[in-house]
Image 1 (cartoon, helix red, strand yellow):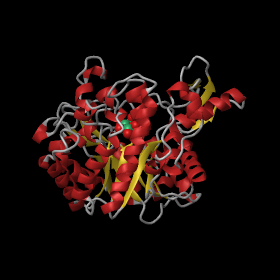
Image 2 (tube, rainbow, N blue to C red):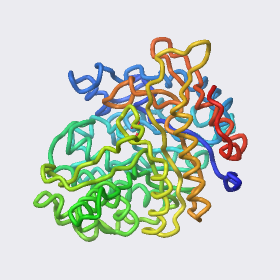
Image 3 (cartoon, rainbow, N blue to C red):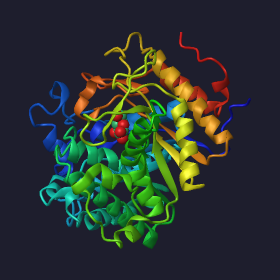
Length: 453
Ligand code: BGC
């Protein structure tokens, strides 16, 4: 079977501002919640912070030249809200806008299409002081910021993403405290989710006033498979999927939440004003799917939220972040999205894996056979879903280069390009070379075994 991808299919890679930029106070940037959180003792592995990260703020021209050498056709990155609006609303920082303007121009000069995420977790600290995502006004704050970005860049930017992974912000930031702002409050999590979705809707609505291109939402979908056919395990699987997957896509695309959320959150689940769903459910041009792994789920009475637990799969390969490598889950996810939500255009906006790569390159090389295999098998699964008729328009590998894996620090390496964090030297790994061949052959080479020698 030919592995060629559809005409116009876009091959690229992805990053996010706080994970790569560094320069946290340069040229008038305001602090974000991550600038604060990373400096609280005990929050970050190895006391790492994003203060330097990949120093992309200063090295973006070199990074873009490397992307071009590798054949990237698109680059998904996020804007730091606090670089553009240091207090989150009101005063615009011209130097912050200029940085992104230069970045976009540089991409276009290298024939690389920008795909811009407005919010990838680094909320301006000044807005956190006003309650952050718990404040209903956050939808207006976000729409104000989005308008500034659309006004400055729409035209040069043709693909916009409002919010990256609202589930992670709510679950990690407000329920479990594993990422900024580090709250642990069951009553806050649904409110944060709901306001993130209202903010998404408000930004899309604002885009329709002036925007001329495409806008969508990026969600992390982790398909849930029942560990057994018992009613208990099936019900636990249903809850886990409602919480992580349907909570966001049902509200954005169907204008409602899955009923299981009331059961899951109990008294912490509010009654939402019905009119909120008119705001949340906006016509979208595409959905961005971030896929990393699956979960096999069983009933677990000891789990206090979902009454569910993930079952480790004997014999399976797990990544450095303890995620099972399960390529078929990508095809299953894409088919599930089409079956549940209809024929909407999709992009894979993230897919990748952390493996224990060497900390330094040897003779200009970094061998990462597991990542080559991960890419290869996931791209085959993606091809399978496309062959079955799912409208997937592009694939953004996570990540262009090794970077700050949030609270897990720099030790978890997801990059196609190796970064030496002492010297900032970049070295394309074997996976980058493999991906270059995939792009050059438009997928054709996926039919052959990758050469990882
Ligand atoms: C996020 C990225 C993160 C990646 C790997 C996604 O949840 O959008 O920022 O680095 O997964 O954990």
